[in-house]
Image (cartoon, rainbow, N blue to C red):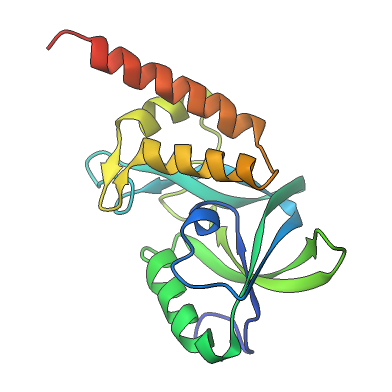
Length: 191
């Protein structure tokens, strides 16, 4: 046991947000994939990557939802890169322990069923922000910025890449429109 609950070699990682467009490693295979019982949601207050402690942003979490289904990318890990990739992902995704490192069953677009490492939102963590309405999410995302850049950039990149791989998300598209309007309004506001 490695202390994070994963006891065996990991062959796949499930990307549902920024791992889709910025995995941080070279996947040996990419395939569209779906997991049931979860939904992609802006439910994690970001205090480092896309926000600060003073002005938290919002980033995506894989939030448990009994009737949910989330599409994303299954990213294959080369056996020779396993330990390095796992260390990288843990350093990136477990900064504040808001995610649980979990193995989930995925259905790939070609019909294969695989198990993949996924980072699932911990609802008991103080950074959990589930249940915010879309207007509030848009206001937070439009104004937050962290160590990896503006929160809006994270939203725009994720929405664009989901559409690019044929997994357009109506909620993400709505948020993108709302955040663009807020940013335009802020630019046009007198100083």
